[in-house]
Length: 109
Length: 86
Length: 210
Image (cartoon, rainbow over all chains, first blue to last red; front, side):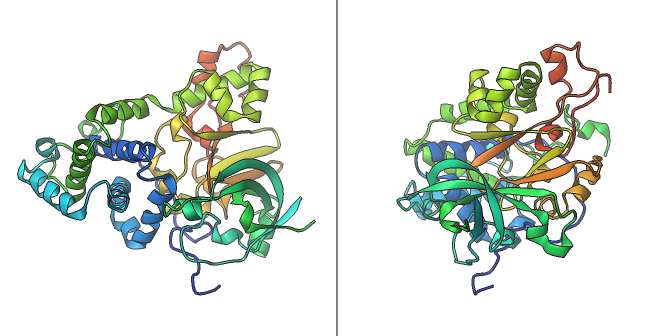
């Protein structure tokens, strides 16, 4: 194996424990993240490969500590910045404004 | 047709799983042309590459460790990762 | 966990509208609003896309499988071009490229995505949590029989396991074997026997009355 060896997301064949069959229902904010990925892809701002590329570059800690749609919104957001859909400065200002609206998702959305 | 998956380990976004690199299998079917994800992932103009389903035996992939040697694994591999052997 | 903490589907609710706003939820709201303000998408687009995804469920796949069990010409079409067959049934599967895989007396198919979590979401809806887990992604290509046994499926030695690693642009639908003793059932009754897990390949179709 050369310098760029097997990457963390390339899991096929790795040892791992029992499969946990627990299931959760998707929350509205998770469905919205999913929709943002599909819609911004349809607009040519990103694509499935660019979504995955950012997820892979986020590394194994993100996979272990963040939920699926937390990782997705992180990747979608980086893709939007890369595509020039908005700037990091605009994102920061908007996130601050959202936070001021209230302490729950229902109040802030 | 018999093909061998390239045993390459480049950086970047790659859709060829590590556990199949260097392994030999049989072409199962062609899935037609798709944008090369290695360029698409970076929003670069993407070349069109044939996507091929390759069939491997578990014995070829895992050797003596195979759970059952004659079980089968199939995966989609882009043509630029495959070398024809016959 | 007491039953009043479970949703009608029997699953725990996810902390959402009433829980403290998280950093990532804040980011979702901000990104959505910025994309709308800049004219890339509309609020209506978001509603419509959520509705479209909510409408997709294993019931769509089950209808496809039941039709394949009862219509030999359709089964041939499905195995030849899965996407076209689903569209012919009137299902909006978007741009998805679907390959249907038939279980037989000799072959059992099972689907995994080792590199991420590719899934035929435009037919079956969003994937179950375990499909995206490190455990399923890592082990299914190496010890599929042990994985299937964990799902309660022990295959006879005469059956070959055919694992499909969904590595790139194709998505997969397993067509489970039609259970014995179902000759008199119509397509709706047959579809009720087709579980999500049987279409991923970690289960088989239910017996009538089971």
